[in-house]
Length: 363
Image: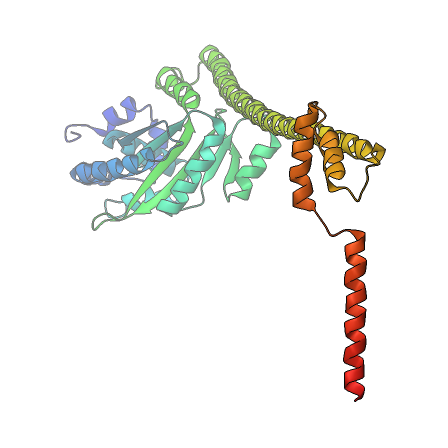
């Protein structure tokens, strides 16, 4: 792929100056060897990237996943630029160690809808892979302090991004085969991803310094940030509405339960009241019967007279004298008792018998 590429063509195509090339202290042959090795391992790197993407896609907070294996020419451009900037770890880079120096040979982006979903993805990344370095949370100017504090509490380094976008970056180490591989995972919202893609395509390579393009990209960046805020607001609004509807439903159910209890109580009170009325009626009837009996003065020695009086008191509707006397005789027979004379005669005999037994005992 790069066999026929000359150094001058490479510098021109990637907008690198001769001064930057000389500052890098790299050799063209060393860069070509790195590019050749990278191409030879591309399929293995792609397999690793796909594994990371499938794993992240299982996370509920992840909307979608993108991945790529770094283009060989872009890899060489990065090596020259970083070495020219004086980054010490790029000074002695070679085909034997470049894969341990460059952290984004594999790049994976996990995209989510709402800002706060990045924290759920953060936990998945921490629980699944070993981190090669501390993760970094890039923030916008003016982001709330509580967001920064939350990032810090999770062990993320918080930095304000010069281009002004939010994104959380992880560098994970993995070794699916013989060679250890570094994978960069970027976690951001869909709006941030859209803005960064437009920014990258429009700005590079020909308009990176154009002030008018930069001005409108800043406006676009702010619109993307506002879209993020609006998405989070709508999410919070729907959550609040759901909670309110739940509270209304719970209140309705409580009202129905209370109404059923009140209805049951009223039914019980009605039953008690009905029983009270029946009891009061029975009491009144008994009082009337007692009162009627109290007005009677029959000859208590005549059972028939007593029976007649009781029948008249218990059932005033017995108006026929014959029926009353017949019923009275039946009652008299059932309640007939000895006369007073008979009782006195029995008592006298018992006394006499008792006296005779006493005399016998004295003898």
